[in-house]
Image 1 (cartoon, rainbow, N blue to C red):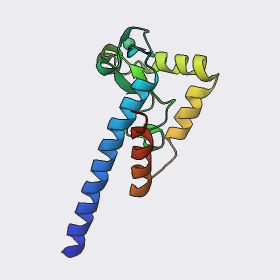
Image 2: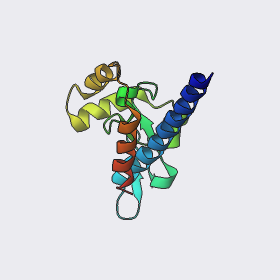
Image 3: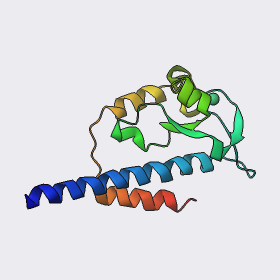
Length: 134
Ligand SMILES: [Zn+2]
């Protein structure tokens, strides 16, 4: 009984850490790409808006933990591309290769299939690292 309770507390803690890291990382991606007025360009359609009105969109899905907080895999996207057009994955792949070099999209796809489990300690370090940018 005690052990089960302990595990569920631990899992809850982990869930909170992941949620927090998603938040700080999303903000980091959007702010890092913003100009002095806070404006950023959508990676897949080029529309420009304030970073607060943009999303951080994933090329390989967030369900893949090895690329969930990869700063190539996650780019600024407008809500039209990220939500209504489901991430524009094909355009995303073309732009990745254009910006970072041919083969980048494929590399990310391969990386996304590596099983990676970050420890809670690693999650906390990443939260600290990305929080320091804001
Ligand atoms: Zn867009």
